[in-house]
Amino acid sequence: MAQACAAGTTIGALLCEGGAVLRAAGVEDARREARLLLGLALGRDAASLIAAARDPVAEADAARFRALLRRRAAREPFAHIAGRRGFWTLELAVSPAVLVPRPETETLIEAALALRPDRTAVRRIADLGTGSGALLLAALSEYPGAIGVGVDRSLAALAVARRNALATGLAARALFVQADWSSALAPASIDLLLCNPPYVPTGEIALLAPEVRDHEPRAALDGGADGMAAYRALLPDLSRVLALGGVAILEVGAGQAEAVAGLGAASGLAVLEMRQDLGGIPRALAFGNAEKGVGAPAGSD
Image (cartoon, rainbow, N blue to C red):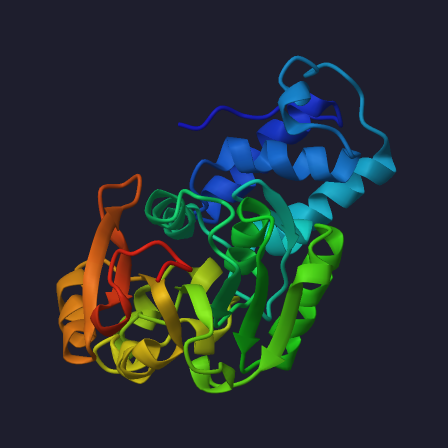
């Protein structure tokens, strides 16, 4: 039997109440999420609340917390409620127009740094399906001499990305363009190409967590009947846009790496690395163009 929560509006009572509400709604790690929501309502660091259980909370702040709690219990993502999400070393704005940046997507940045460790050699970066701009801005933060372009079909997503470029101080080096995948890129123009395409099979979208299924843009999730539609559209053009020694790194879903590698080979690309995320799932697939110097440093002859 669940322990009853004490009445009142102390921090401890509200955390207990919030944890009970979120557990009943099926939210994982409900106590932690309640603490994050209360920290948001109070404008305090959530970790500081653990030692402040007996502190009173003003009625207006308690009401604010309960309003946030109702939103989270309805399975609205915490990132949407907070309006932000950390990615790599950056704090980024998010909205229902973009995917919430996920830790596994950071694997693409790890792969880029492993394959192109010289921070001066990468000069031109592209992020296809940029969404919040997370991949492009993270890469620009690591390659200080580079400029980059973020491409997306969605004007609403591009507005979020531009906002993040300004907030992170990277706007002078980032251009955002509405286009379909690599169609707006010039031949042999990109040293580092990053992409997290939609890869969930259409029939599996209904099985996703409500936070994803009901609140994130379907166009950024739906990979067609087998989850591979975006890769079929993307890969044939990558050899055209990659510069000498250029690298393209794509995120793949669980169990898709081998099939995506096969599509890349059929498009004249060679796999340089298959990197696992922290869960041990192959997540980042890096390609090079054999006709333009696979494995050669960007900018070499």
